[in-house]
Length: 251
Image (cartoon, rainbow, N blue to C red):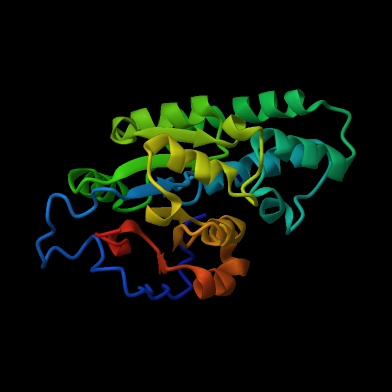
């Protein structure tokens, strides 16, 4: 669960399969008001809908430095698919910490919550894209490992909370991490849409891989936190983008 586009890196090209249409930013072709009826869009939050990964980078740095550790290069990637409690358990094991998982979660909550309630923004064009999908009949859901009070606070502040029909957290599925499809399937069930009619928007390889394995479509958002996996992500995703102006207008 645990940053924006590096200026020195070229932007990736969007890739579309045969069922995708023009990106959201292209308004040259009219879209029927029921174009996405019967379909669902399921959004990851950190690194996909929200430009928030830098918050967790700062938390990791401060938390581990205070305990005398540098942040290992693979740390963020190692916990990206885990639940909040899973992140805490992994961190305790890896660094031999005497704390309980709840101790770590409480400290991380205190360190990060202010950013979610004050400064964390949407990824570019995300708000317009959500409203487009809603206006064309799609069901909208969230599938995240972010704690519920974080997701509600940030989405309400950004004015998009009420656009969503359902919220699915790894905590709702027994803290099963995102390397399993449970949180995505739970989101689909909540909105009453079969998996093959769902498009998931994700930034991590394990999430993209697992939703494809259960018949869902996957669009990948580039985030620097997943840079090392980008070639693999491009190879398996139905489409890739660096902001939501490149997302499919018809799911």
